[in-house]
Amino acid sequence: MFDLSGKRALITGASGGIGWQIAKTLSAAGAEVALSGTRVGRLEDLAGEIAGKTHILPCNLSDLIEVDRLVPRAIEAMGGVDILINNAGMTRDNLFMRMKDEEWDKVIAVNLTAAFHLTRAVLRPMMKQKYGRIIGISSVVGVAGNAGQANYAASKAALIGMSKSLAQEVAARGITVNSIAPGFIASAMTEALSEKQHEAINAQIPAGRMGTAKEVADATLFLAAKESGYITGHTLNVNGGMLMI
Image 1 (cartoon, rainbow, N blue to C red):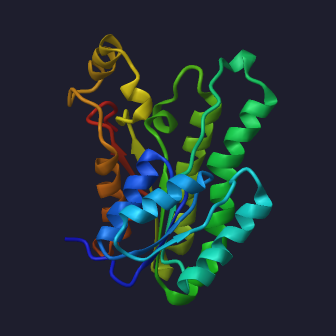
Image 2 (cartoon, rainbow, N blue to C red; image 1 turned 90 degrees about the vertical axis):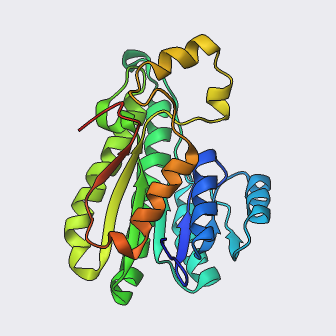
């Protein structure tokens, strides 16, 4: 339904569950994809599952020297970047009063500062071509907050605020900037939970189940496609009704 043929996408955190599925989904829609992450073996495995054209671009997002090289590397590999997916994220959970400076700084650096640098780097080329899709993968925690995750919630809320502000600046240039806020998504981590823990989580969700990485990826595909060209500054909540705003 949504055709991304001829488009070039850079996806951070592609070695993780949601990023992995986003890469597969965008590629299946015709996009050329640059896969970024820290686990090179996982990126190679992902590239092996994708039939379309792929590029493996390892990057440690806590290192700003590496971050500032990533977009030029992607442009060199693909000839340009039409779609940027700021998906990479990390957690260092702790109660607020016990949170260490390094726990705060690390999460903000990876989840927010790196996204700022990458987004800034793609803007000029996108403005020249008068087309671009910038999508940040936030979280329901960034919208509602969560005890023990002040650093993570702050980074994901800021990602939404940054996107809304930028959307106003570049809308006239054919560039859309949107966010996706997933709720509980089934993953390797949630598979390790007990049946009782699963039941407690599902009880919070009107849909009665966790979401899938494919459902987040499908939402990403929509926002990456030309059909969503009149949607910008929006936060798409993919949470099974857990938070309705």
